Amino acid sequence: MKTDDEGVLWFFSNKNSHKMDELEQDHDVQLFYSHPGKDSFLTVYGTANVLYDRAKIEELWNPWVKAWFPEGKDDPNIAIIRVEPQEAYYWDNETNKMVEFLGIITAAVTGKPGLADTKEGTLNI
Image (cartoon, rainbow, N blue to C red):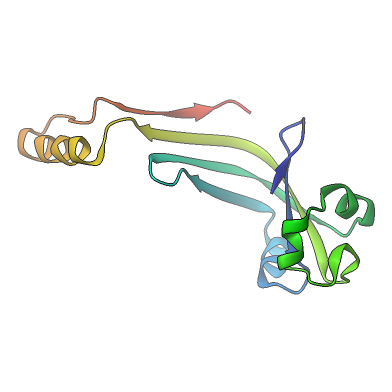
């Protein structure tokens, strides 16, 4: 995945994957991201289009992609998915797991929110 200067997300895909069939039927997508080891999450809603643009494949190509396309950037099965984000939502829990667990227990017992260190919101795109 790569993000360009305009915020567009670019992905390599196999043109024969079931994802291509899904995108032909519905261009609306939802992407999920998480930070390993943290309780930080991001969900992005957007519109996807499939491209078979050799110049774009050349521009986006990197050695990691060869793991999925052993024939290299000239592999005839390469497709590019272009996602234009429309809206994003994030949530980030800054406490450690034990504090988070105690906050959940406190909220369950008292009926009052117990996760004061959680940040969340909508991002303007």
